[in-house]
Length: 171
Image (cartoon, rainbow, N blue to C red; front, side):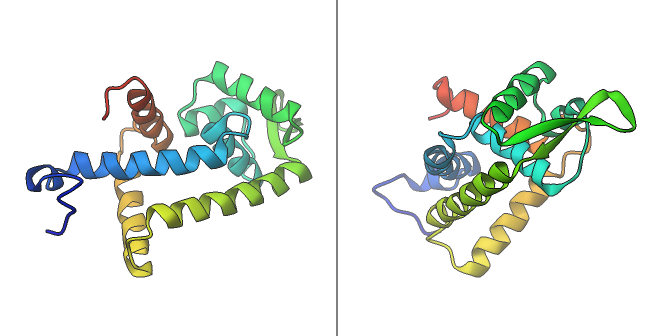
């Protein structure tokens, strides 16, 4: 095992939780610098990404998919809409529901932010070769989507970890 003795000890370096936490904290610091100016931060970016992908669904469905409380989702979309990044339109199949669409400004902001996030990811993963980065992403995606009971969406896991980090539970 290779590790920096100035950073940790052999026993800690062998702990999966320590390694995941260290990488996650590095990613949070890098991503926070990129997403801090976007309404809703990481959640806002996820909503904007979904609106751009063109998979139109109701706010309620989107909230469920991203693991965001329905009320929080309403305020989040309100903020994105006030910023001119998204717009709501009536669902032709259900007049009670509203569909979310990215505006041209939203698409431009998303492209800019996505590139900055890609650069932040590259910095976090810079000790790895390109092949190792791809392998790591594939393995993490597999683990993140492995949950089959629907209660551990990727968004919910990240939100829980971030809340613990900010509350001092994770060091």
